[in-house]
Image (tube, rainbow over all chains, first blue to last red; front, side, top):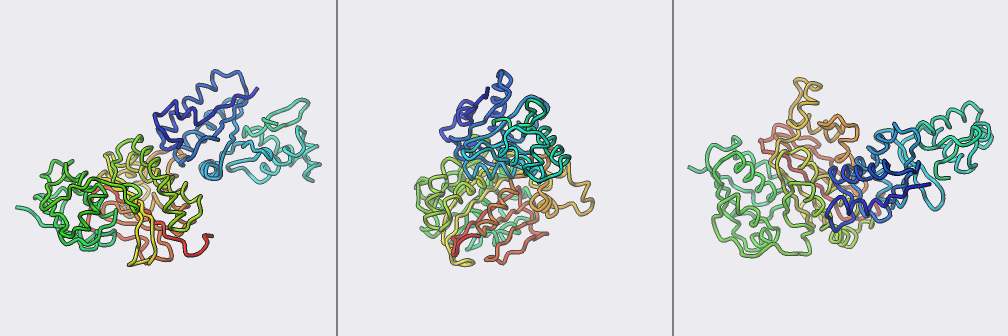
Length: 178
Length: 300
């Protein structure tokens, strides 16, 4: 089960504004607070923040809504958050904010999942490899990427630690929305 | 007794120091008569600077300054359309004829002078400029459509600096005009000013010890703009100016920030400003200007 949270809708609830602009820290904090409330009440392990009706996102608000939410959820081992509906400007704003803090998040796109933010190169390659192979273990990923198995195992472990992938059945690792 | 302060005929961020130098101490010990009769042109930065001076005097309990309004009809009209007289009225006593014109939409005025006191004001400011910004930036300045969003982001972050750091309210204005003297092209300009504590005091608690004897307005500006430090220990802070710098790099824009006795600038190739000017005449608060020029070649 996946909980989809329309961020523009949350914005309208949080702030009395006719615009679809996520700007300012207080607005971001208010939106994040509402998202956290929804997540706390949800039985779903995975949540998707849908930005498709958001026109503008400034860096302060991106930090409050996305970066701080990821930091809060990093302590909750069974929770995954992904984003979708990002146009290019939103993508850039969130990427800049996450990269500065060594954070990363999964973005759901029509052409498959993508990573936004900052991760080591091996972790990024492993993420892409996992997207291509589907749920697999270290041996499977190593075969796909042409890596030694310990290198693949370390990258998969890092993906799980960073909340970018989850443990699947029989020792496999999978992308949370795959 | 009043102290007469002459306003330069061409009043912009460069000649602003001439204006500031005429007030030896803040708050001034005597009533100011600000003589703007000879002004032929004033940039948004300069108009906000006048308001900021009056605001600083009012907030310190000083006597409302006198303001001799420009004699030239077109200058007075422009100041009225920019909402300058409307916002100056509670802060100064006018000398001379003030047009009864209300702030009005004009093709070059993307946002008339607007107070910024709370985050709600930033929502209003950003929302109001989006349509006009698209018209100016893509239609007149030849920027790609994506430049509009970055412009709004830069505006939002600049305004939030007031709310987060000034400790008092401020002002914002956004205009487009032909920048004949330095560039020979049209520009879009965001100007923001406040009468607050300035960068040095805002950062003092977290940064001053690191700089020791070198801690002053200039080093505070460098710490904020070049090193991206913030007065907050939160690692997500200090990104606003960094984001503005990235936007300016893409569109060959200029950023200038004046605070206290220093002015720092991100200087594009088309301008000859100095990166850092120190030991300037003191002026209250912080003044910031973002200038985006018309593109004469495809952006990188």
